[in-house]
Amino acid sequence: MRWVAVGLVLMLVSALVAPAVAAGEERYSYITVEDVTIRLEKADAVVTMNYTIDGGIGFLVLLLGKSDLKQKALNILSFENAEVQRLDLKHAEVRVKNISNDYGGGSYWLPAHTFGVVVPSLTIITPQDVKHYENVSDFPDGLGYFV
Image (cartoon, rainbow, N blue to C red; front, top):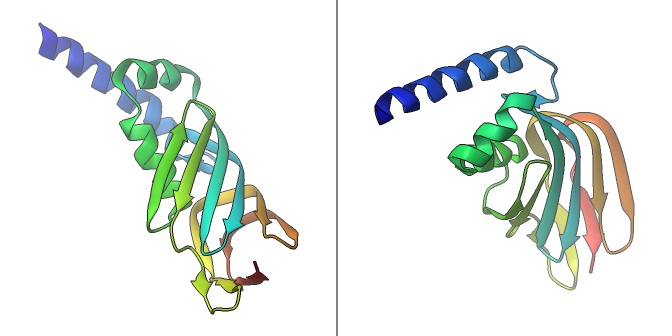
């Protein structure tokens, strides 16, 4: 009986997720990205992503656990050495170790990066400046900064 219930839930999830895949470029499965903020701290960063989840999926995430949501958030951000610090139905906060190259003397370089979706609003915060980008799927030129 339990396997039947699990099978029904899986069929419901696949029915809800399939239409979401065909939607806009800022979508990844059942997640629609609203914005991403990268706050650089020496060679590391704290990356915050705000998003919405399709209506019926939120209940399933609460019911079945956040492991799928966590993996999809990491796939969207697409950073190596990333560790989820906080995750809920609207936000993810991820710490990324060694996101930037350390050139010594407080000089760092954030290299080019490609996200898993189009990010409607990307903000990069360095100790000196704040850079803002709209509707980007990648950050092609990189960014130098000092700490």
